[in-house]
Length: 269
Image 1: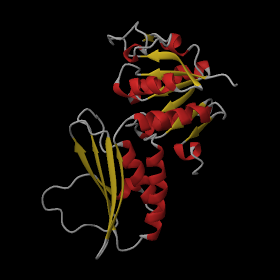
Image 2: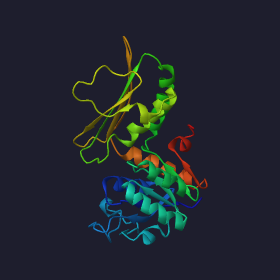
Image 3: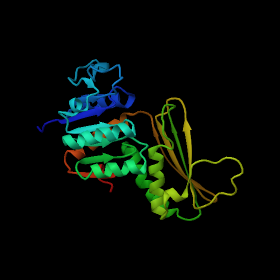
Image 4: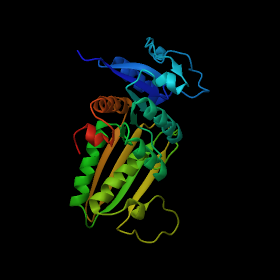
């Protein structure tokens, strides 16, 4: 039997972090060896699996080197600035990284690409297997519906989400725009108010909803004359992101340096 994949989790005391910890602890081929949190976290010093009534042996720490010293892979769903700091340490220590963080700007994405020349990085705005299958469906739909259809992307998330539109919605827009031969930066419309005039058919519209505890809903609408096609994905639990992240970790330990996506992990590329 092969050795378990040694995984560390960033933001281990948060909502997503705990979901990742639970998935790792329950996976027979994975071992939780590190758990990172902010220096002001009240969870520091506690076993990362204590909330499950279990002992993992991984104590939550704010010390990057301590949290990463035994890890093969770090899974990070934190904030852009934190993720970039973690990446620098992972590059130095030779730890591969699964990035589920969203909200990176172009300069930060370029920094990630530079790190990927030296270590394996799997980066995706959504780790759900279903969402990544939807991305392929959107590519097919956009190519077939390339004339006479207006495209709108609607996404909804919980009240605590800090970036908008979501990284998943933006990725959906990028997939559709690429299939149509457009540049999303040139054709995206992120809000409408007042007298906007008739809709420009070359645009891709985005609408954002924030409220309650919505995990993540995304719908891409292709509205034509006499019909409309809606391709939707709705998440009812973060467990889908956690399980997708473990698939990404398994992928990275089998591959070298490079910047990968979930389409690579799932064999959809």
